[in-house]
Image 1 (cartoon, rainbow, N blue to C red):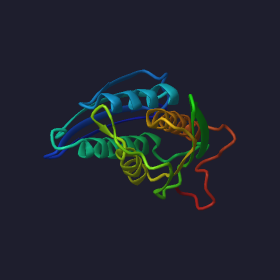
Image 2: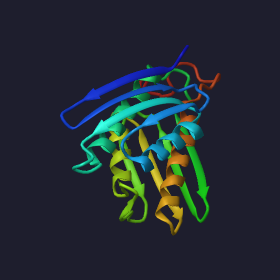
Image 3: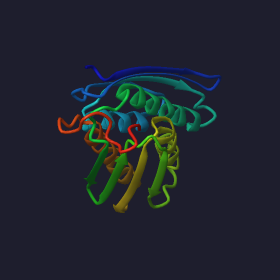
Image 4: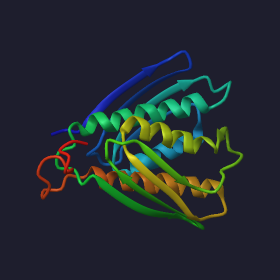
Length: 195
């Protein structure tokens, strides 16, 4: 069974296409008008071993918010669609990732209930054209559209770039963990019978 999805979204502010394969090898082709965000999405694919083709344009002359948030929407929808009924998945995933002095942890539940806990020092300023406050907005859009519960914590760090990179790496690895098929799981991993 191939667990993949294609999502497109076109508004007056953005145009986005996402092609995601859950059981990939970490291959990616990412093109957005925000170089630092490209780097984070490439890290996501590589460290989660997801195959990802993502193209986005947006009104970045206004700011990067619409583009970043809409990519979170599309990526969340793609994950939800690719997992289908979620039969046999591990459901829970966790990972901790360092990036030099920074250390981030992600805990994830593919629960059917969107919820984000973001315990991160106030991310201020920019890396290139990327407003660091948009990191939380991206993850909020992702959880809302993937229907997952996600806890992100930064345990240590000084450099904002390093913190964000550690966050994306931990998130990718936690999502990879949660989406794995466990041969011991019969059907949907919930006492309710649905996720």
